[in-house]
Length: 428
Image 1 (cartoon, rainbow, N blue to C red):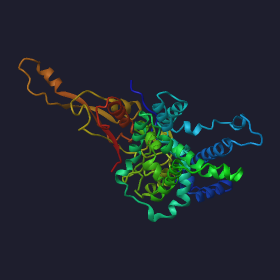
Image 2 (cartoon, rainbow, N blue to C red; image 1 turned 180 degrees about the vertical axis):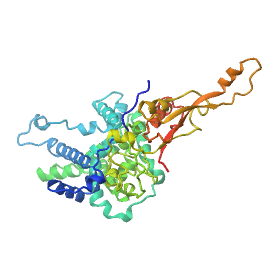
Image 3 (cartoon, rainbow, N blue to C red; image 1 turned 45 degrees about the horizontal axis):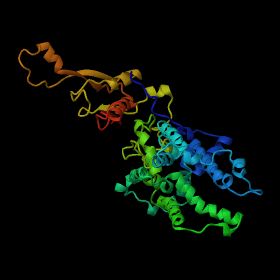
């Protein structure tokens, strides 16, 4: 029995239509403050608030809870301040847990954190990158304060470097198989932790205690500092450059995007103004305004500045009526159209959702030469026909359930097709 996924659009942003409504009192003050903070704050204040909370939490764990000194030193100094495990952010960086488990040939608690984050990624794709990662939040802050003020360094020519994060991820995992742990140098949370330890951590130690306690700077320290500074310098080439093209943790988090249950979608109200492309910090929007699935972090900034409401929050009832696009069957890939086997997964999904926008029609197949008398004319006729799916354009709203089911069954599970045989396209 086919399992129907939940509605594939999950909108948490403040729509442009809502933003244009007249406001007064505290709502007017809040609206004005969010606008001054930037389009991301105004479009998705809940996301920005969560980012800020996670960053402050990380800094508290790093500078206060982990501070080893007290008026009276004892073995209880850390436990007395540790209201939350200090390793919690390392636990939720998926590459840390995975590489450590592979290198040590045993599981660790970070593997549980990795599994939780990856499962959450089915609903909030790369949610760790867009909502939780303190390094990503600091990069956003750097982009706002420095990066966007030096636009002449920005580059659009990425080329083959666009997939550097996947190459780096592969290198980290191969090294882990050999017992070498590289994630401590290149994974998101370790890069931030080591960078802060050898920079702000040493400054804190020198100012609060004694500069003589600061350890000497070794080659490993210089390497960690160079990586830490390099992460921010890369942002001069473009917003979130590290996150988009280099971060191996982000590469690992991208993988569940192939099975994501929610995705960014546009409606036929889109006027191709290009605002969403301009503000997307992750370069997740194609020139035709479709979504680069491996890049999108579900930050939803695009939906809050969209001037036409083409990307906007909809109620469940509205989503059932609203026309997003049109499903198209690729007859060169579809198994029934190729005469390879019966399949009606797309029909089942569409009917289960109540749209009934797909119908099965008989098509003729080449049967070749049949020995005389081997089969009756009716049997030959039956062997030369198969039911294949066709989309009824007047009933299809472009919800994407058929594409999801085809991809899940024949690409993800059976691996018989290179891509889904039915895709949703924008209506002309």
